[in-house]
View 1 (cartoon, each protein chain N blue to C red):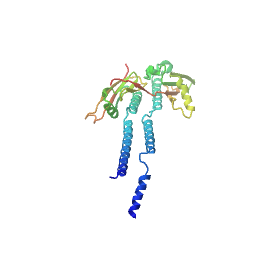
View 2 (cartoon, rainbow over the protein chains, first blue to last red; view 1 turned 30 degrees about the vertical axis):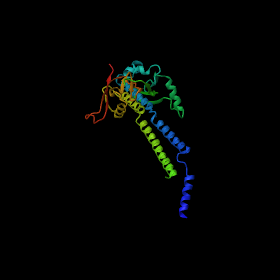
View 3 (tube, each protein chain N blue to C red; view 1 turned 135 degrees about the vertical axis):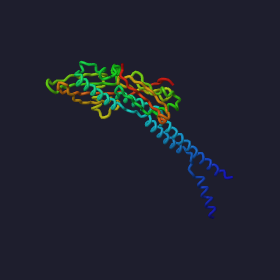
View 4 (cartoon, helix red, strand yellow; view 1 turned 60 degrees about the horizontal axis):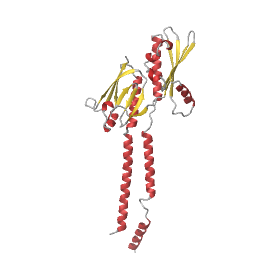
Amino acid sequence: MKTNKVILNKKVYLSKRANLLSIWWFAILALIGTAIVIATAVFYSSHIDVRKAESEILANNIAKCLNVQIVENEKFLDSFDIFKECRLNKEVFEKGSVYFISIIATKQTGNTGESGPYKFGNNALEIDCKIKKEAKSAEKYPDCTQKLAEVYTMKGDRILLTILAVSNNDGRDVSGGKDE
Amino acid sequence: MNKKGDEILFEQIIFIVLNLVFFLLLLAFVFNSASGAFVTEQFYAKEIALLIDTAEPGTMISLDITDAYNIAKNNNLDIQNIINIENSDVIVKLGGSRAYVFRFFNDVKIEKTIRPPSLETDDKTFLDLFIKEKS
């Protein structure tokens, strides 16, 4: 009796068991595979954004350089070449540049007044900078750094420098390169 | 012989083999992507450019580029040409037919040397950059 029941159960199992290699199994595999491939591709093709760091370095370099020129050499922007004195590559700031610098100098003692803005590089980036400031999300827009620096001249004048440095340098992928 | 039983066993073996193949392929894809050249090229190009931008003339920079060296070695590239600095551009090439280019703004002269792994470098690869005043 018991043996008959076991045989019966086995028959039921053999006839009603789920097919392992069903279309649903392949669908699940495809789903898992696609999700992992997409996640990996998104993660490893991710973009490293250094525009903010670059704009900060540019602003710092300008501030340091202007400090030396104004304090030690008693020169200001209308009397010296910023590219030469601040070691900036002029070609990089020419037409189609990915950089922009704006400098405003405000004299705060004696005959107070403002000079500038002295602008170098791609002027369009300044507008993009303003848009980015107001927009909630503007990833494609350039990164900007504004720096205020107070400089004291040998004559005792206090000058406030407002430096805006903008970078939209994103690098580029080129086919070829040098040598194999 | 139990023909139905053989069928079930065969089906289960196929099922396990297919699953193994599928997950091995996925693992291979993930590892291949993780050791891919693109992110490493971008990483080194940007790091080197930022280092150059912050450097003053007279600075000597030594950067550990062992990761880049390993990828370039797997792709049979000449180690001395994986990183080049030309006309304010850092060019990093670790893959086959393409390279990553990143611009820097510091107007300096750069002398580049790549030191391959040796006992002296503790089996690591170094990129030495000597920043000089442009004449």
